[in-house]
Image (cartoon, rainbow, N blue to C red; front, side, top):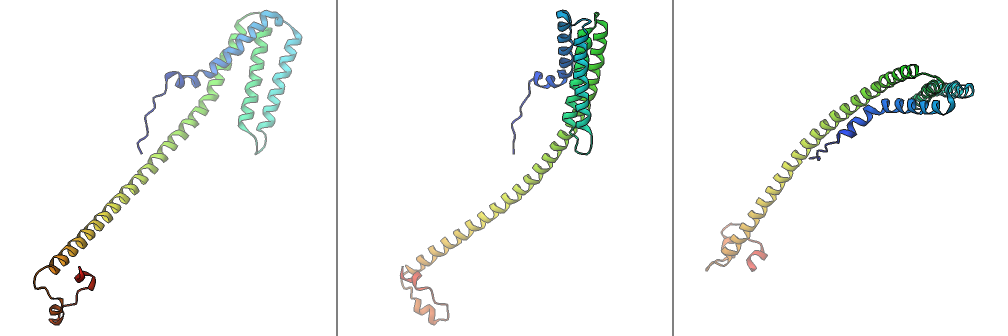
Length: 200
């Protein structure tokens, strides 16, 4: 019932919060590296990124369509599409202001989407913790009742054993007294003692 308290490292707690900014920053950096290596004003590279972004967005639309749509696949596809757009603009543009503007917008959108999932996850975690504590209280109550019941049964068994032991000692002591005659007791109207008790 007593669970160990585990203190998580602050990096473990901060890593999920930094993930959207790290992802968009990585795409921006890779796009600028690509820009420095010949992608600036390259029509072929721009067309490639447009095709990749459109394909990923189409895959996301198909994944989210219908009742059986998978939100994880759709979200991943749309994230890939946005990443391709950011990388394409960062690679194609000759200045830094437009890529930085898109980076800020992409980071804000990523945090907006992630915040929704963080709220849902926090709500589920709180509901699970409440359910677990209620179950722990119920089981603790049942365990305490069963422990009391078992203790009472043990005490009853002990008192019964002590009574039987005292009775046996009394019978043996009475049988060893001088002048004890079980026939005289039986003729006097008293119940007859068991034979096994008198033979000892």
